[in-house]
Image 1: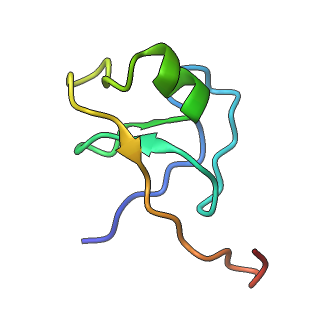
Image 2: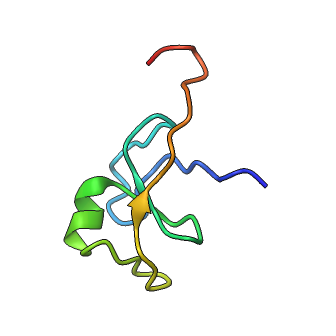
Length: 64
């Protein structure tokens, strides 16, 4: 089962998070930008889990 790479922060909804962007996720794949994660002290507001750096994927267009 592949990781769902959500493209927006669930808190501010303004941060665009492409697959190669820095983002934070919990074990349920809730997704937040680094600024919101810092503001929430790296705790997911949905499940109470720890927010950790999301693995990055290569961009589909081959860029870096």
